[in-house]
Every structure is written in structure tokens, then in C-alpha cells.
Amino acid sequence: MTKVDLITGFLGAGKTTFLLRYAKYMLRQGRRIAILVFDRGAVNVDMPLLNELRGDHCEIEMLAGACDADCHRRRFRTKLISMGMRGFDRVLIEPSGVFDMDEYFDVLNDSPLDRWFEPGSVLTVVDALLEEDTTPEEDFYLASQAASAGRVILSRTQLADAARIEKTLSHLERACTAIGARSAAGRVLAKDWETLTDADYRSLEACGWYAADYRKTIAGGVSSFQSLSFLELGLHREELKEKAERLFSDPGFGKILRVKGFFEEGGRWYQFNATKGSLHIEPVPDNRGAIIVIGSDLNEDAVSLLMTGKRPEHHIL
Image 1 (cartoon, rainbow, N blue to C red):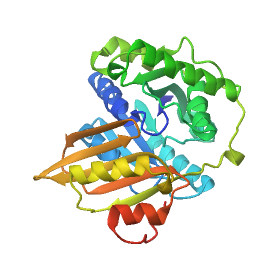
Image 2: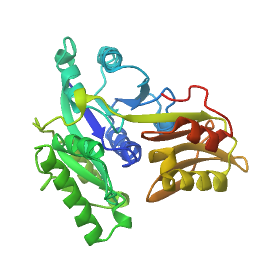
Image 3: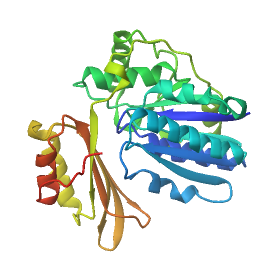
């Protein structure tokens, strides 16, 4: 049977960056792999970062989340059936940061998928610089994803000292306790990703997963998070930085969790990835201009006016 690895983590934790490294390890072992990337909206700005992996030994597909839960599950199932027929050695899945873990296990147990696939490792990425002022809903996703993980992998440890990492782990434990989820203690990898070795990746590949019990504290598993997509804004670095700072600092826009996407400047393309406490800008191969604003209780009119100077035209996804 083909093993399926789930690489999850809350919004902005660094899942795609880790997936890129993990997939490269798989390819170094001569594996033939498939990658399935979810997104909450119809526009996926993470998947282009994985395009360098495409080739005879790696296929990449996207599953858009701009539909209801039942539709999403059907699409997920259909994608896996197609992958099962192509006989990959391993399938890697990166869901949205507000993914319901039950969907993963329920779909893999559906027929005929249960004859082709089995859960491999569940790897949950947690930002070592995790913010303290998170909502109960944010903490639910943080804890429910970590509860099933064979390993919890801290990102950005190179930017955090021991006290800051301990603060993050204490936050994670409180979130787990709040929903009656398994403690993450003893399952945490806190290491600079630049220093990860093939031995580390082998350990992650073999770490497995846990059948977790916890209380679903969000009504019917329905999330309040939204994403607003903006295409071809033509904004440059400083303009995007200024707008992102305003989004995070002014509660009139709603609670903004992440601003991400791509912009062109000086004939080169760059990735833009901002959370309240961090900003990362780095060059990427040719892309398309798209910026996504993710948060809860979003004021669509205000966000659209800031980003485009115009009233929205059904940006919400």
C-alpha cells in the first residue's frame, strides 16, 4: 500500500517551506512521489513555490477549497483515486492551515482508497514564534493538528531563543489541554531546518501518527476564517509592506492572520509572506501577481479599498 504523509500546521507556520525540503529528501531516495496542495480559496499562491520539484519523479496537484465541506471531501477523494491509479511510492499532502483532521482519516478509510493507501506520518509545523493573543478557534486548529502528529516540527527556531521556544511549547500544551487533546511533549523537533540531515528526515518519515481524541470546540467543524484574493495589483515591496502593516495594526480591517503572495519588481519576482510578527520576502521563479489576505471577521470593503482603491467585486472565497 502507498503511504500518505500529511504535513499540516496553522496559517503561516511554514508548511510549504518544510514540504519543499521533505519532498527533496524523498526524491534523493529515488522515490516517485505525488504532492497534493490544498488552499482555502480559488487562488493558490503556495503551489508555485513547489514547481521546481516537477519532473518524472514528482507530480503536483492543487485542490481548491472554494466550496462547502462535502464538495471539498468529494474532490479530495477524487484526487486520491487518480493518484492511486498511478502507483506512486509516496503521496504528500499539504492542507489548508484550518484543516479538519477528521477529513483526512475519513477519506483514507473510504473504499476503494482503503485498499490503496494508508496513513504514513502526520507532521505538524508550529511557528516557534507563535503569537500569544490567539483566539480559541485558532488554538483549536493548532491543538487538533498537533494531537494526531507523530512529530511536531518547530519552524523559525533560528529566530527564537530557548525561553521563546519554551513559551511557544507552553502555549501549545494549554491549547491541547483546552480541547482534551494528547500532549505534544516528547514529540517535538526543535532544530534549525538548515541543519536537518537525511537521518532526521528518515525519522520523520517513520514517525507515524496517533489516533487522537479531542473535543470539537468549533460548531459543526465550520471555520470562520476567510480569504480575500487580489490579482495583478502592481504593488511593489514598500507599498505591500505598508499595506500589510496597516492591516495588522488596525482592527477595523478584522483580525488579519496572514498576507501572502507574489509581486514583481525590477524585472524579478518575489514571494511576500507576512504575519503579525514576521515578514519574509525572497526571490522566486517567474510567477503571477496575486496577494491573499487571510483572517477572521474580515471587513471586505475596508480591505479591498486599502489594497485596490476600489469597492470589492466578490473577492471573498
